[in-house]
Image (tube, rainbow, N blue to C red; front, side, top):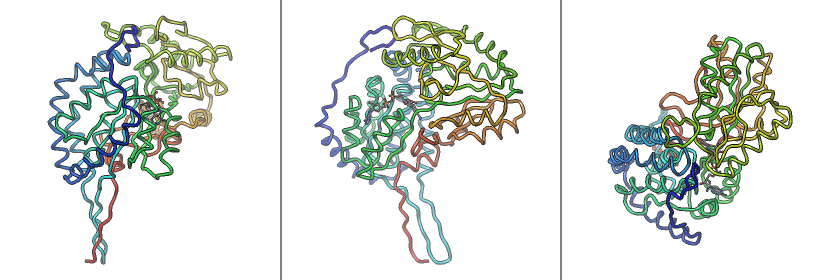
Length: 446
Ligand code: NAD
């Protein structure tokens, strides 16, 4: 369903739960041949998919936009990002998985990065091309065969992504599985070796419990409640522009959305005024409409959750500065709440909607304490002109990725990593790619 207008975008046949063990068996059979190739050979099999993804980027973007409501330009941008970086990503994975030699006076050892076997890749809907892409590529190059279970909200676009890769892959190497949590759970419980999961903390905990008895390997990239700390010397235009962009991008449905803003009390009023001004200029509406910057929530359930958090916060004393009013369909207006505190659910649980919550602080210790007062630890950002001071504050924030005067994403080659309950294992960059492989140490006397 298109969440912007309720129209049916398409349909697929669900994978029968009792068919899943057979699909896993086929993937295991296919793994023998696929696993026998070198990393480089596997990357070379996949390489021609780059050109096909480039050709199809507009169509994939359009489909993603219609399935989950992302503004069209952003959805096409997501598809292009995957297509344009495809070959470089393959090369990076091959390099990361290359043998490493370690030796001392007596022993010569080779560290190999072997396949784990069969991988279940289970993905969310908010980046419906990027998430399958980041899970599937390293798993395949490492020599695993993969069953991809995309979100039930964005099945069609993930199916198209898999179809393009399957133009080049041998049969059984990449198998899409269609359904919701039931199919996902059946996959985790089946005879697989690795679960690569991106999604909510709650589902991550369930997967960990289901994978535990078989000691299956897991990589869990989970939700967040990212703080932004605005110090008294921050460039307020820069900080407000970032706060608005990172709170409302993808209608706030981003794992590293800014969900909590702590601003020095001395600059609070001016910062809020700038945020409200910029928020008023956003254009919400048809994701395929000219100039739309904010689309709908992915579905009515997500909308209801966001609206309930806003209403509860306002009832508990939060001040609504802009937005908050009910909108037709699945839309929630970009909303700024001030005078919030940690007694409110909206400051504790992931919102995943277009809401910016602003709380003042008076000392750096207080700012750090508030930023760390959460079980989550995905991303964070600190804005301040004195970079050394901002870096010191950043270093005290217990998150996997912290940006100083920018978002939390690192340079090329950095992992995408969550701390605390935002992650268990991680992906991307050499360290992330290696988690899709089994390290084997093969040694001989010199
Ligand atoms: P979700 O946890 O509801 O679902 C994710 C996937 O898991 C879906 O494919 C779903 O069908 C499947 N699933 C549900 N129950 C399952 C079970 N018991 N066993 C196996 N699979 C199961 O998450 P969502 O609503 O699709 O996505 C939003 C969440 O994803 C947010 O919490 C967001 O922060 C998080 N996310 C995290 C990152 C990151 O990199 N850390 C990136 C994107 C999204």
